[in-house]
Structure formats: structure tokens, C-alpha cells
Amino acid sequence: MISWRDAMSVGVPALDADRKKLIELVNLTHQAIKLDSWPQIVDVLNVLPSYAQDHFRREEAVIDAVQFPEAAEHRKMHEALEEKVRILSVTFRAAATDAERKSCGARLNSFLQEWLLEHALKQDMKYKTFIPKKATPASAEQILQMGLSQPTDAELAAERKARHEARDRDVEYALPPNLAHLLKRMDYVVPELPASAKDFDSFEKLCLAAICRRVDTILVFFQRHNPALRLELPTFFLASPEFTGRLHQVIEKFVFPTIWDSRQVRMLATNFDWASENADSFWEHVTRPLERSILQGWITAWDELRLLENHRNGVKVLQVKDTTKEMRQMLLPSDPMVYDIPKIGNREIGVFKSLLDPANDWSEVLNRSWRLCYDLYEQEKDPRVFQEKARDGAFRDGLLAVFGRFPPEWADFLVLTCHRVFPRVTTSFLERFATNLGRNEAEREAHIPYTIRYLRQVREVPEIREREREQETEWEAKMKELRNYLANRTPLDHASNMAGTVP
Ligand SMILES: [Fe+2]
Ligand SMILES: [Fe+2]
Image 1 (cartoon, rainbow, N blue to C red):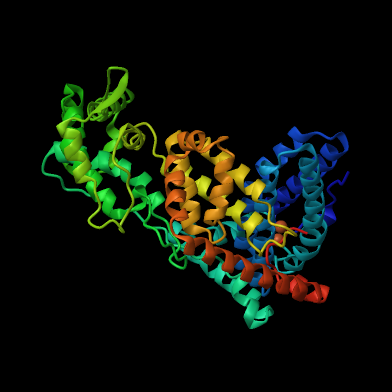
Image 2: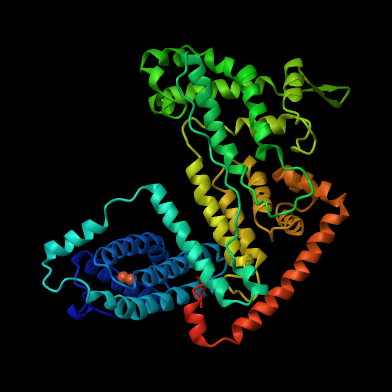
């Protein structure tokens, strides 16, 4: 057990309070290991990411305010520590067996010890001399406040980007040119929603725009992709901006009229000054019962478009309405290479139905889950975390855990999005992944129909597998080279190269 002593103070009460909290976490973890208590480890891992973030930002504000000359280096150390926290908690969440959890607990323990002894009690002490000696608690708080003048989100994002770039440069610098690219942060495109439409001349138009907007927040998530990846086959329909436009037209023509039919929805126009609202702010005026009527209209309208099952002489016959035929036509791509969509049946209608949730803005959960997928990918399949052997299993289990948070129809699109963004989530990975979701193709198809459809198309283009095999061989060779190179460096090199690794 470690206890607080005055010599551990850095002279700023708020930071000292943080340091006491760190000691608490160290002790708690130590005790949990001794007692073999996982719930306690989970408790620590739950608070650790936000603790680290809050503390580091507070401290960085102070060292900036007192113009600590080594502020930039110190920030980098924080970033490396934060990355380790992130990896630790992801690893723990992905751990499937007791043995794995145990080893995570042990890693957490040694990591916290290192943080306290190496960073807090050595590195942090370096800025202590820059804190004005006669600082009263009040003036020390003023320094903190000075540095904490709230940066905007955009400023924070820009700062983070700059830090990542600086780190990437350092790492690359330390590596021979033929290996440098292996440690570069993966780049991919995350399309953003355009600004919310406003200035509607009728309440009806605002209503329609607001509904399409909710759908778009989900669709735009699936539009992320990695332009550096060569994908021979067209993307799945949900990921295509052209499809989004076509779906809007279908919603306007076949779905919105049913929603608009509801007297309650039309009455909403009298409840607020809609003329000054936009497609996002609209939702702030929608009450729970109204959400339900909007959703009800949405579901009824899509159900109207379903194919009807009839049985004639014991044979199942699907009857397609004219409106459904028209919808099918409207959702076809301008060119087959723009996106892939099967002939629209009840399954697809089910997918469209899952895209509106008036009670939830899914984007935040989607983005948080994506972050988890990204972390898992980095940890299990990316060389910046020098794992002896990439573990498909942990990545797969992590993905499956993520899917559980969303409507079941989305699992397909999430896994295909990983394929479109992560270079090593190849079609062979998709094949192996699919085998976990059913004993045979029919069972798998029930879970992830579009992935199975995609894999069938892949089998018809042998060049895809060939290219993947070549890339994999090349990758393995480079990895071996990288490992050899890193193994032969001195420990000092290692310390200066903060690649966010878990020891
Ligand atoms: Fe600190
Ligand atoms: Fe620090």
C-alpha cells in the first residue's frame, strides 16, 4: 500500500487531488490482484480513461500557463499513457477466458505502478520548480483557470491531429525508410453530414427533412472508407451517397405521406415557431407520444410495401405490389458499379425500417463503437502494437460485442465497413468471421445476408484472393523485418520512440 506524503505535492491543489486519486487507484488494483477480484479491476478500468484524460488536460493547462519548457515532451508522455489506458481497457473487455483476464489485471497493475513511480513521481516533479514558490492555494488555482480557458471542439481536434502527426513523424524518423510506412497511422475518410437544412416554407417540408436527416446520420456513418484500399467490387448499398439520395425520394413518395396523415404530427406545427427551426432542432420539440406516432407511421408505411406471401397448391408465391415494383426501380443504382443491392424483398424493407429511431440519435453510439472497433483492430491486427501474433479471435469477439448494441440488421454493414476501412480485414477474414455465425451457409445468411452475398461475388473474381495473398505475404515479411529491427535497438531508442505499446 502506498500512502500520500507531502513530498509528493506538485504545489497545485487540484493536481495534488488528482495524484491522491492515482494512488488510490494503484492501491485498489494491487488489492484486487491479491484477492483475484475482477469486478474491482473492472471498476478501475471504468474510471481510468476519464481520469487520465481529465488529469492530463488539467496538468497540461498548468504547464502551459507557467511556460514549462518541456511541455511538448511532457504532453507526448501523457499521450502515450492515455493510449496504453485505452488499449488496456479494450484488451480487458475482449478477454474471453479467466487466464486472459488475469493477465490483463497483472498488466494493469504494472502499468499503474509505472505511471505513479516513473511519471508522477519523476517526470511531473520537473515542472514543480516552475510553479511560483509563494503561490497561495488561491493563486495556484488561478494559474489552473488561466490555462483552462475553454478551447473549442475544433481547436481540440486540431491540436489532437497535430499531436498525432508529430508522433507519427517521430516514429517514422526512428525507422529505416522501407519500414517507416508500417507505423504510420491509418488514414481513412469519414464523410460528414452537411449543415442542417433550414428556412422551410412549410411545416410539412421541415418534417420530411427532419426524418430524412435522422436516417442520414446513420447512413453517413456507413459511408466511411479507406481510399488507399483497392476494392474490386461495388460497395454495399447503404454505404453509397447515391443510394442515400434515392432513399430520400422513396421516403418522400411512399413513407412520409403515412406519417403526415397523423393529426398529432400535423398539430405539432402549432406548438412551436417552426419557421426558425432546422432539420436537427425539429426533434427538440417532439414529445415521447409524438415520437411514437412518427415511428408508427414509418413502420406502417414500410409494411405496406412488403411482399405478400401466398400459398397456392402448397407452393409459396410472393406477390409484389405495383408500389413495391416502383420502389425497386427507384432504388436501383445509375450504374451497377456504384453500389450493390439485391432485388428488394422483405429483408431489405426490414433494413430500411431499422433506419429511423425518433427516440434515439444513434450517431454517438455508432461513433463510440467505431472507436472500439478501431482500437481492437490496432491492437490485434496492427503492428504499432507489437503483438507476437495477431489474434483474429479477439478482434472477432470484440466486433460481435459491438454488434449487440445495435439493431440486428446492422451487423452486416458494420462488418463490411470494417472491410472497407481496415486493410487487414480481408475477404478471408470475412469468410472466417462468417463461420462463427452459423453451421452452414443458410444459417449464416440469416445473420449477415449481405456479407454472404458479397463473399459469393468475391469467389467469382479469383484475382481478389490472389491479390490478398500477395499482400499478406509481403506484410508478414515486413513485420519480421520490423521486429528484428526493433529487437536490435538499444532500450534508449525504445524509450524515445513512443509508439503506444503495451509492454
Ligand atoms: Fe500528472
Ligand atoms: Fe504528467
